[in-house]
Picture 1: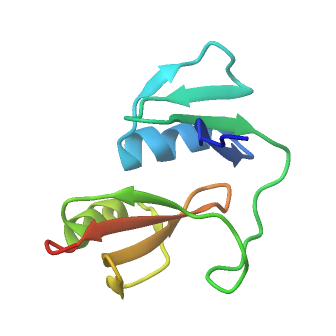
Picture 2: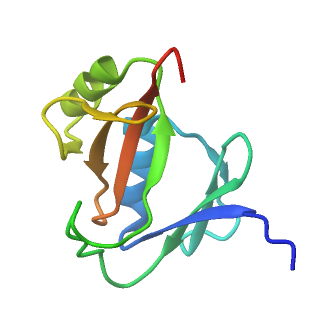
Length: 124
């Protein structure tokens, strides 16, 4: 076996709210709506980034519950947090948190999924 991650799929309970969040608030662009409303592919450098419609939102308890977290690299974490807060995005942290590679802050999408914004330190 030669495993290779070929796509990142985020399950969302309300596709239109997810599209508003990921496109209008985070800044991704739609690549294709060919299979809308079940699937929407977003533009992303590297692996495919897919929103997939499911029935129920996530009930994840962050950060104490085992889960998969998607990290979104940003140039300026403080500025990104301020921008997202002004757009009504739910921030899980009031200020950046240190991690081994830099700083991060978590956000929650409308379906309850957690993402972390990550600013790498210059020396990492």
